[in-house]
Amino acid sequence: MTGDRNINRKQVNYRKAGKIKKKLHKQQIKKAALSNKTTQPKTIEDMTKKDRRELVKKQKKLQKKQKKRDLKEAAAKEIEEEI
Image: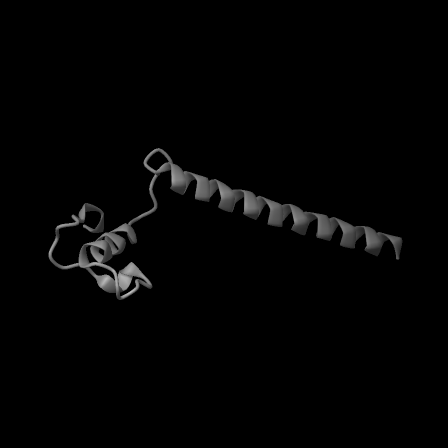
């Protein structure tokens, strides 16, 4: 039911809103709480452009890390073979 939330809903779990400044207007707090969803991961078609960009960034970052790891392992093997 978390996906069907409505901004005008009376009770919102404000803890899930994260670190919200106390000075925010009540409606803004509600929006922030609702935007911080704990729903299941969406399919790529349902994602917003921003979410898609973030996902691509994360994937690229992981690929870079994996590439670095592979290079380190290859270098370690070469050093072992020389010895």
